[in-house]
Length: 316
Image (cartoon, rainbow, N blue to C red; front, side, top):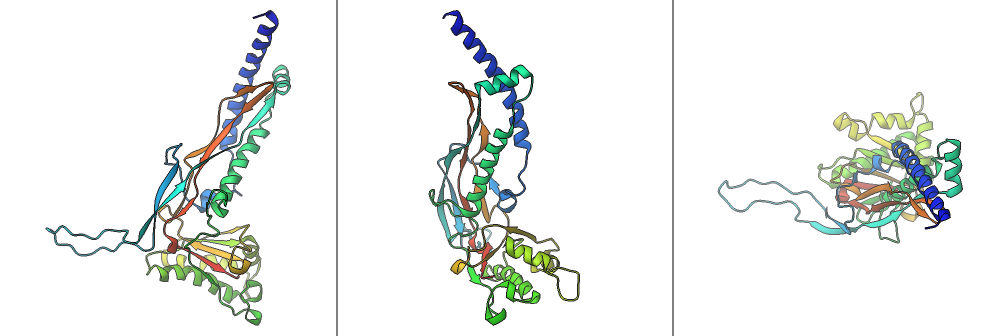
């Protein structure tokens, strides 16, 4: 090895050492940052328990719950759950997003004694969150994933057509009729499951959420949203608040491309999203004059295990 080559290699190793130290600090900060607008984990329970390189996750969907019965203490027969259970496989796929720095960029920061800019790492991490958010709510047709907004087997019905001119849209309905539509969706789950399920979450199109959040009830300072939060069947039954969120993407998800609202019980036995490998950055690699930080994750789809614990209301 000649002197020039040795000097170059030494310089690259020094630059690599600087880059490794810098990226470790940057990534620690990036992992702590939250994206409240990409709140898929608030809406859907996330399961990371499967092996990181599992090819698929097996789960069971159930049309109804098991039923207990009296036993003969000395008998051999006993009831079991799952007489209507169906086995499913959710495939797990690899995906990735990373970032990198050029040789000049690294050495300029090193010579000036300043930190490398962490913006590239933050952008990469956000890209991961955006992709998972999209899969959780909208699915992915290329991978055969369905999302929360439109999932096969979930009961769907149009809201009552008694607005102006017998339309279903909330803009033509009175506050009382809107409140009735919401409670009808919540009670529909109770009825369909013979009172074994009670929805604790309501997702509305952002446009409808904003409408009821800014429209007051007659002769009061209370908005329609505030009234629903106080006077809904879930809160009346349990004393607990109903979680209500407005989300983009629901304005045309209903039958006939109408607006859709979703009610469901937010629990892992009802639905979950599989992320066997949460996004991680790998050690810095040198590729020519580029210091690349690969990023990888492994993602499965959304499973709705108890479809009747979820319900769609269309046409609002």
